[in-house]
Image (cartoon, rainbow, N blue to C red; front, side):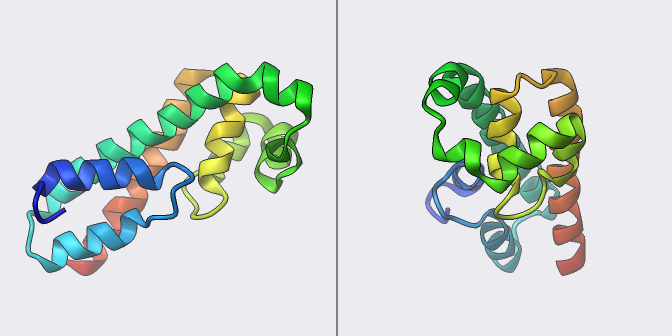
Length: 137
């Protein structure tokens, strides 16, 4: 992040929405500690993470037939079962660490309405980052 600045933060937040075990919150804390502009941190991390979960949705959408046919591990996960049982309401848990990213993949597999996905999931991710930035500033 130090070398690439806000672009590095965006990439880090994007990767944190994937199965790669990195923490966007740690990156945000680091950026604030380095006295980066809090609004810029919120903007760049938010964009990166929202793009990441949109990618998750797309992966779920395009891999759905293959995963459903093979009854993959994802279909046995708690996130998938929650999304299957509660539908669009499960997206209200998509901001949470650990379970949130798999819910965004399950949303794609289950072909949830993309506009509702964006409104709910993006808003909650941005709110999570806003609270984090506000707490440290």
